[in-house]
Length: 401
Image (tube, rainbow, N blue to C red):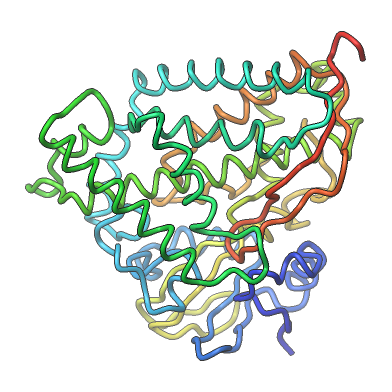
């Protein structure tokens, strides 16, 4: 009998223990068919590390073009298919990816990384003097969104509204949020970015949107819609996942002072700590594909047209790969987590995500002595993102610890 948890319900992993669910799923039903519900089709659920990795590698038979997020696929597919990097298959995917990688040139990344480090140090130093504060609102919200906005040269006065749209696009702070709210937020972001694409095409500058507006893919310029959709992907991917990782890091340190002490006393390196936080948090719980042909997966027969979901949040806690997976070990080696995916669709913004988290850890070590919870953190509601919308804490300055 297959597990009964409804993975289409945004409240499922708030009301239930996700790690207990995935532990049992890996053991008893590593690949299972999730029955249709609410008039939406069923789909395959893949939970073990080896099977998830195999799905990422099987890009010839498992397509991204119809969509890579379960909710979108259940609604019939992604209208951005073939236009946005994340929902494009080869050979166009390779051409689009090469263009997007130009956005992450060493020069651009160096400039953005310097701003990330300065901004993060300033934010952490300021809140350390406050006593009680909400880390999510006072620090985490300001790092990744501003990083991506720096890369896209988005005006300062527009960033607050973009953050609000981003927070509604893939998750909600309420269990009863309407699906229309997320669709409207996504549309607002795309429309805003389309306006910028038109503007930068007419008056180019030294920024990523201008670079994309002046480039060609497969012999033709990108349309304003294609530019907007790919910038939208950078914006949402860069904001939500990094914001959730930063919040998860501080929550983990508050709950596990021993690991925080290891980091603060340089008993573990920053880079290995970053990788463990990324595995521990796994903000993007799943990615999805559509089978192009009949195939066998984990001993189960998958039919052409079936939706296949790969649950990174389970794979990153697979006991056959990670010893004591729910034990936070900032010195964990090796740590081949799948937080950024794998294969051709490996996240193009992975370097920035790591840079932001490293800057946060570095600033915490420099300024903070002790980290204490000062209330109950609030979870977000989403079947795609895992994380928290609030994190009330107290920082004791390092000099007083």
